[in-house]
Image (tube, rainbow, N blue to C red; front, side):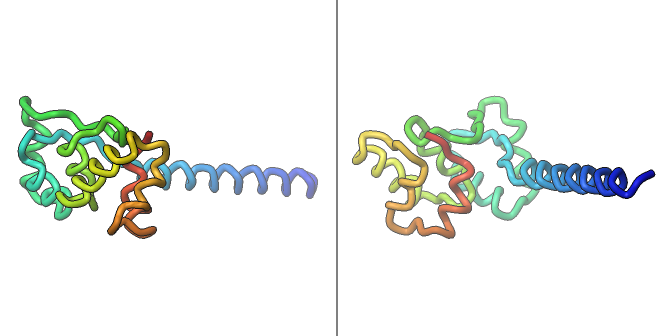
Length: 131
């Protein structure tokens, strides 16, 4: 085999490996679908944070509501916001109040305008939202 063919095959192989790594990282960073029981936002948030055994009850409750990510900032409810790790009671309330003030979000980046949501928190929670 010629040197040019070896170099081409090496480049293609390296590219495929890098592409595979990219898709793996992307797939693992996507939020999972959760089921929340109405009125149980605090328990769901606590269960998500420590991945305790109590979390399984939310996955099997037939009377629960299904939370599918990404959440639309213009239509999501308080309970749905509470299901996002990093969004507690006060942040959920502020997100909804700011939505009312704006008349609706035009960009997920508008979350940065809310007091207490800086770049670090925004980077953690922004993947869970869309407009």
